Each structure stands twice: as C-alpha cells, then as structure tokens.
Amino acid sequence: MFFQAKQIKALVLGGVLAIAACANPEIEAAKQLDIDGADVSAEAAREYKRLAHFEDKQMWDKASAVAFSEKAIAAANGVVGTGPNADRASVDAEIAAAYRYLNNMRAMGADRIAPKATGQAIARLDCWAEQMREGDQPLDIGFCRNGFAEYASETAEALKAAGKPLAASAPMLKSFKVTFPLGSTMPAVGADQVLDAAAQYAKASKNMRIVLGGHADKSGSAKRNQYLSQARAERIAAMLKARGVPAARISTIGFGETYPRVVTPDGQKSDENRRVEIVIGPERLL
Image (tube, rainbow, N blue to C red; front, side, top):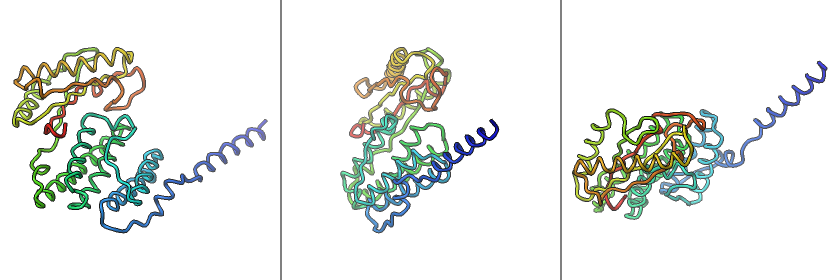
C-alpha cells in the first residue's frame, strides 16, 4: 500500500509538472514578437506584450496573459480594435463610455496625429476592462484606468494642436458612485453629498448627458437583483431631477448582479456591489 501510494503521488506530481512545463502557444508567440515601427498598432502591440508578460510572470494569471498576448499578436499585424469585447465586464457603463470617447478621437485622426499616445490609450483601456472583469486587484485597476486617462488626455491635446479642437475641448468623462443598504432602493448615508456634486457637474454644461448604471450584489435571486438594480438607477435619476438635472439628459440601465465591482461567491453580501454608477460626459460620447 505504501509503495502504491508513492506511485500515485509521483504520477500526480509528474502530471502537475508536465502541465506547468507546457507553455501556452499564444503567450510564447507574443514573447517572440519583434515589434518595430512607431505607428499606433506597433505602440499598442508593445504595451500588450508588456501586459502579457506581467500577467504571466508576476500575477500568474494565465487567462489575462493569453488575452493580452492575442491582442499583442493582432496589433503587431496591424489589427487594433477599440470597443467593448465579448467579455461582459467591458460593457460596464464607465468603460463603455471610455471606449466611445477614444473611438471619437480616433475618428478625428488620432492614430495619425498622436500614434504613441493613442496606442497606449487603446492598450490601457483594454487593460482596464480586463482588470475590472477580474475585480480583485484595485491597484491594477487604478493603474490601467489612470494610464488610459493620461494617454487619452495627451491624445486630445495633440488633436487640439493639429486644429481638431472638438475632442480636446470635450471634458473627460467623470464618474460618481453611491451605494445602497441590503435589499434597499434608497441610497446609503452620505449619498446626498455625492449627488449634489454630480448634479453640479452635470449642469455645468448644456450638452452633458448622464448614464446611471444600477447594480446589485449576489445575496438574492438573479431576478430580484435585476429588479433592485433597475429600481436603484431610477431612484438616483429621480434624485438628480430633484436637483435640477433635466430628465431628457438622463438614461438608466439595470445590470443586476452581472457586473460586480468586487467578485464574490454566489449568495454573498457586498456593500461595494450594491451601487449606482453615475457617468457624466458630453452628449456626443454618451
């Protein structure tokens, strides 16, 4: 029996080592990329390659490493897309709005006018969407999100200098968040100050739109959480209207428990996930 147990242990260990030694072909292909050039695709490819290496070697996150490796390979071959992926987290209201903002600048010639900043912005925005999908690395989310904001701003300034002032003069998207007690459609204590600030920002310009994304945690049924998320968004809409924000500028959507800010097991309560995200930006972007 002892000998048999040792054989089983050796087989299991050998299998684990074999799996570990089996490198993913996409990751290996991305490692071998020799990226030349200074166009937007090359710049995005370099950043995707760096992100893939970080996820593979530092975070031990093979899924993200593969995702960034595939993007690096595509970008190195001149294929760079900007839009929410099939991944559901990438349609988070704030991220979807950021994709629209970047697409607008690209349509105005950002790829040609500011290829380095635009390529970085593309990769950092995809990174932000990927980290938000995972939801458990706040520092990584912040790194990608802030990086996108920085490079998007640099792109806008370059467009302005090239005589394309529309994108540069459009304010960057701004987001606010209010949370909710368990099972409630009334926001938690402290929401009034957030809503006052959101209303003030929204009314600062006549062309601003507001998108309200309602969310729930996983402590109830999916059907109940869908109802709560929509009801929360509509409650915040009513509270913003009471503060003088025109109803025609406000859109609401309930995401249910689908897009958590913090990933939790089914049935677990989460103050962070019971929320409404208020995204405000220029009308043409939202």
